Image (spheres, rainbow, N blue to C red):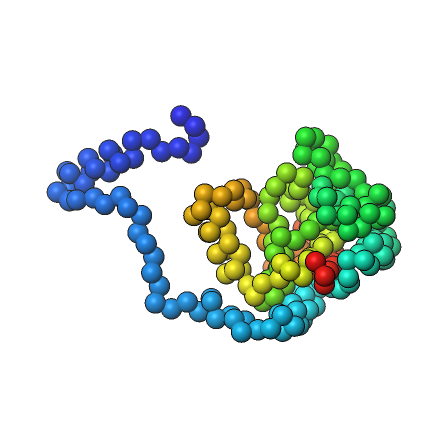
Length: 230
């Protein structure tokens, strides 16, 4: 038996129901809610209003937000790397990075999913980790990263600083839209990611006397690079 599998579930429940003199319906309940407040958040916001909300909240969560066109992504990354004084860079192994920033990406080490131990060691020593967001929430300035080959959450977790490239096309009002997308993938039998990471700026803690400390157990600094024409 594979770990996590349930065998003979129906027979087991039927026997218990029979002893209790009950009928058992094993059909999963369909949840119908009268109110859907989550669908109303920023529902009528224009693209510019979503962008402005994202900008405002990103500042609140101590994140550097830089905006550019794809033709300037090379220069933008170079300036950010210089600002963060990064020399050891580990990037998500995604063809889009090398296509959008071909010059800068020549200096990166790339995550190798065939050598995860070696890649994790690189991540632990890296000054900067570079990833691409699969979605971004205007409401909370949160970015979403789906688990997939060539990527690992350690790229955004272990290096001292994190740079996330965000195509403007992935910006949505809030988590509701991504949850609906994932539910649709699962319902349609399509491939859904086996892991989803939500990142809202640099790590922080306010456990000690409610004083906010940023960069305690993860990236010290986080930069969002919002690319307008992608």
